[in-house]
Amino acid sequence: MGSAFHQGDKVFGSAGFPYDPRACAEKALVDDDSMMPIPEGISFEEAAASVSAGFTAITIMRMLPPPPARVLVSGATGGVGHILVRALLKQGYEVAGTASSSKLDFLKSLGGVQAFGYEKPLPGRLDRSFDAVVDMPGGKAGIAMYGYLKDGGLLVSVPTITAKEVCAAAPSRVKASGVLASHEKEVREALVKLLSEGVKPFISGRMPLHECQRAHELIGSGHTMGKIVLIP
Ligand SMILES: NC(=O)c1ccc[n+]([C@@H]2O[C@H](COP(=O)([O-])OP(=O)(O)OC[C@H]3O[C@@H](n4cnc5c(N)ncnc54)[C@H](OP(=O)(O)O)[C@@H]3O)[C@@H](O)[C@H]2O)c1
Image (cartoon, rainbow, N blue to C red; front, side, top):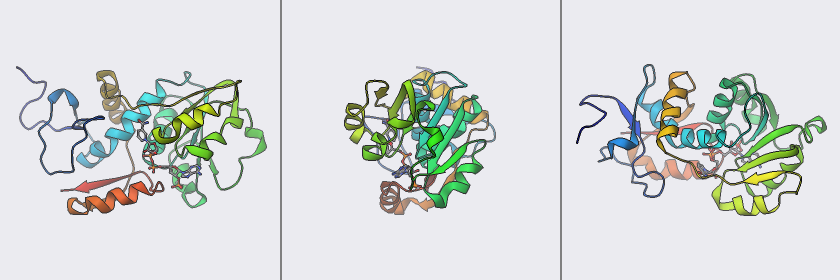
């Protein structure tokens, strides 16, 4: 059977995403329909760093009201958050984001985003002012976000591990949903388009493949900035 790709093409993607993830390896056998062409001007590292976070960000965006809606991203400097902020800004949303105070400069560097430290409550003028909130930390931090939604607004809680609990706590005046990142064709195409429009992931660290375990421990902390890539 023919393939969309030719020998030597630069491709990226995720093997077995999301239900049958593979190990970190230098070489992998993959289905070509799970691969995407790397757009001009995007490095292998940037392409690799964009897959899971990009799929998630795009899936979330398909749930949101259209631009120029006001969206608050809670946890906006992590893997999913920073790509989502860049993509929302690109599409004309009005975006606010939260981060720990030490990362506010990075958050502001993403573009025209209103940046707030999450260690203290957000300014009172933000109460009930957003059409949608995207919650990255989940749990109690997610539940605390409902007060920033307008009536009829939507909270999307991203960590699957606490999404049920966060959604169950939704007041009746708003809507709430968990999310499962899609990798369907339209999402893959949307990711290639985002990258070719210059919406790139930020790579905060590069680690050799043999430090794969330490890399996972670092991202498991829930406080890494942007993405970490493994270098073969
Ligand atoms: N449902 C899905 O399909 C799907 C897909 C991908 C990821 N996920 C999950 O979604 C979550 C986010 O993913 P990620 O890759 O973006 O994680 P990440 O890179 O670890 O980022 C987590 C972010 O949350 C912030 N944060 C931590 N505590 C906070 C608080 N109390 N209030 C506000 N922000 C806080 C962190 O900021 P600081 O660093 O400044 O503390 C960081 O920016 C993870 O749990 C991940 O497993 C789900």
